[in-house]
Length: 101
Image (cartoon, rainbow, N blue to C red; front, top):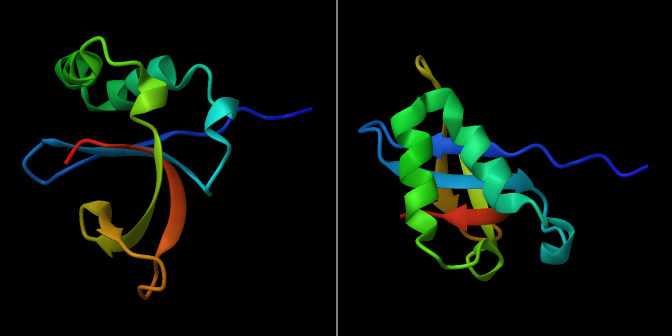
């Protein structure tokens, strides 16, 4: 039985949209409900943020915006922050998702 991937939503310190991702470079076709799941993941930041995510897709199918990329995380006093990275960068890990920046 395949378990649904867990989406992580990230915003910047200024509250701007950063990214939404699942860990690993997964098959893009295995994420048929990605748009809804991404909006739901951003709901933790409030209704306005979730609405901004929804509007950012602006008619563009989410499967055309999903991509494989790399992130690295850093712990701060305020929690975990994510930064875009390249393969091979220290602490970089593969993700599949959407970049808003």
